[in-house]
Image (cartoon, rainbow, N blue to C red; front, side, top):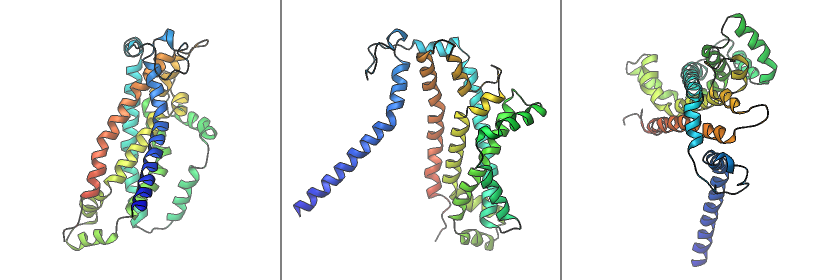
Length: 280
């Protein structure tokens, strides 16, 4: 009995040690980002591979916030990311529900076409997208980025939402309709509360994808007034040098909205697991 408890303790300790190594490995790049951001410029290269900076300063943060257009880039990225996430999630939820609950002519063809659109590399279609956006007069506008991001994220988001709808028994919806609910009312009061985890996951994924996207933002935007954050980071790279301190400080500041966003949707992830239950 003692030997069994001893071996069980070793296994548990091993799991915690492995988990600790994994967390340290995952968080180390973020720590290094913060370390460079708070290191004075003259010490960035002299510190070398030291894990602890020999100096400490917030000058890089103040310079980024006051002397650069970071706040404008930040605002533009926030508008594009929130707009893309909201529109894509609404469309994907409706499409995912339709694919999950209805059988209609051409359903498999539509699904196949949506899958095919995910097979092409972005570099292959960036030129046609640029010509289309230029033809309709949307170059250098945040609207063009929202439209393009929404179009490219809808297929994946739709399949993600369909999987959540497939996991909800149709009996719940049918029971509500027997009690007098219309299909829309049953969807709103019974199904959607149960899919809150799926909606939150889809919203978070699309927000993160739009927030960090660079290729389309680089090709479709060339004005400082509409430049997004990933493109704005390139302004810290000059022809002969890279301002590492300010770039890392801007990177740290860019993590704030993502962290706050996921903290906000976390409550809905938990709420979706407990709401919408059927009374017995």
